[in-house]
Image (cartoon, rainbow, N blue to C red; front, side):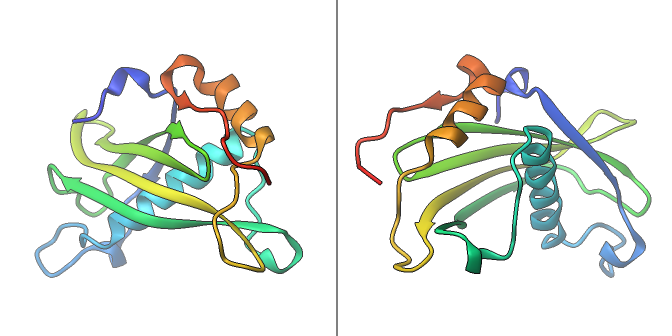
Length: 154
């Protein structure tokens, strides 16, 4: 169970009809999209530009692991609150934590931890998380995120 007191950011979305499965609840795969939506909104809120055209950049960020715990179903037209934060930044990796709550009922719907690695665009090998990214996240998260000093060189 995630420590909800550490989350400073949230975004919202409404469940759309095509996200529902034959049982009348949100299909489990859609939660990956919901959490991704929360991560993009979080980064945008911090002023970090997410550019999907990596050909012009020296590095890229990839998801290497996603964990989801489903707690309660969401249904069509539910308004969901996606709480998102970065919980740690290490040398070449970092993690997002998130949880989704039914806005009106305040019911926990799902929890997520996703692990990301910063890669060199040309070699596909891990590279150090940029200092600017560390600084921006530290400024926003404060002591709620464990941000270690890099041990490798760029």
